[in-house]
Length: 117
Image: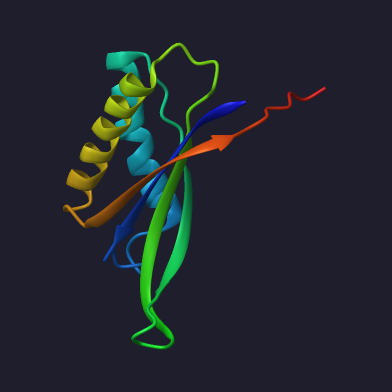
């Protein structure tokens, strides 16, 4: 089933202070607030990545925290409403993190859900 995948990459956060768990906790606080206001659930998967640049030729030690979200295909929210709710979560997360550099990627994907038996 077709849907959209959203991912933000947060650059410049100190990995000795921030972890996947702390980023996830901050995301949950913002996502819960947005859910209470809009009824739209913005879930996320937090990943820690390393920035590699061809100019540097090697791993430079810069950690990137990435949060990936997928819109549930049969969700009532329109793509526009979901994106607006997603951006509200991002804005709160960035504010709580001190406005780090960030990139946003939106992709069309196919996804299948399988329920536990």
